[in-house]
Image 1 (cartoon, rainbow over the protein chains, first blue to last red):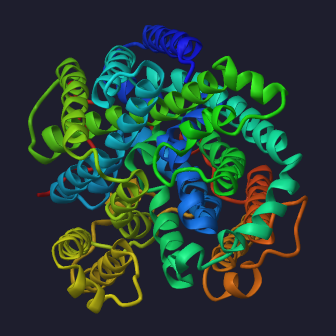
Image 2: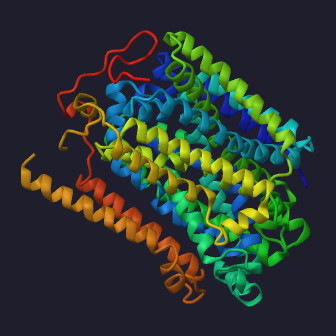
Image 3: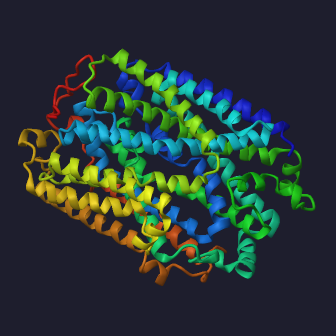
Length: 505
Length: 101
């Protein structure tokens, strides 16, 4: 590949992101509320990109074309769950933001633990969240490493370390403001590049998007409907993937926490209402996946980078795409987009994980007394520590697929859904019910995961329909929460009133 | 806010919840296999299986924007009620909502 231009673009982008993230942080007043929630002052533009860019990650850029090539229309599940996954925050987000501002909550775990008056819930949620973040951060680092490897020839871990040194720097200095403003830059860049490349390449090779799908219908029709190539995805499995992802989507702690950063409750709703527009950004990625199907692309994480080099192994007779491929422009654009996707999610995850470890585990669950300055300093140290731990896992777990890692990670935050819903909508939900439900849900998810890994035959016999283990666990969680709540004493009216459960709004 | 308006808005919010549940069910078994899992008809060249999902995305966006503009779902601000900002300790632990365990 002609990596000269791409190398310049990549390092220039890293420098710009670093500068922007650091400068954004200088606008803050300091303190935990500023570092974690931006003093609850984010405006509509920043909120839009924070919500969207945070979620559209290296998984979306690298995983979408890969999954289209290997599993065909199974990839459409991302549109399905994305179209409904944020809806709970539309209905509950304003209240979450209000209660958070009133009671000084800046993380999901302290919010839910506060509702149920339980340090166990706070600590368990935070600990589980941090565990679920690990594969997610590894995915982002892997994406960054793949880009640097393609552009500079560096080993994947070295490239990942270089990119995430920049991310750590602007998160440590800028806090959530650094995350927010770099997300704007990254989101705008991703949108422009993905739409440009995602339309230009199919048009160049097939005359139009319709021409692309004409060829797919003729040569690979199994990639357009379920159960897909080699019948890998039954309707039941597809449906359970959607249900699991839809229930857990808004429960990811770093997403949920953004309710606390918005300038107003109305803005939370506006951000949610406009979020589905970010789904449209995946459409050109799907087109690129089908280009890979038609032209024999690889079914692994390098699919998008293979597309960057398409003019070299499938040359055209002139045209803009051929020129862009020969002069490294295509590679530079795709490298930028992947880095932007990786960093826009990775920074939020590092920031969220460190915030939870300090606020939820150290201060709330363990009861350590720490002033604002001490908490902020600890969060900064944990940003560095968490990034280092994730990098070590990247080195050790390099063989794992991007998409499979993320589907596993979803089994954890979905366990928070019954607690959030019951906590905000059911006065009868009790502390013991929440503690029991959460413990059972997370315990069962862990047990099923270990069983699936250690004894897949036994797991398949117990779960012949292939229902997602997260879905099984959250169902058990909800049943236990309800049953134990009905048998135990609810919180006082005074406490319920703080969470607006005795008010008529 | 007059009571009739509050009741009407609550009714629309419940209708909206019902709509989104239907939207979710339209994307999974048994509805999606029966209605959405097909190549034809093609919509602007893309297969029906993809177009169907995108139509649901667009429809949900429209409904969400309509709900936002109509203020049918709770969007009250902190200052709308009589509540005051919570007092903070230096450690950032709020003085309200103590945790019992």
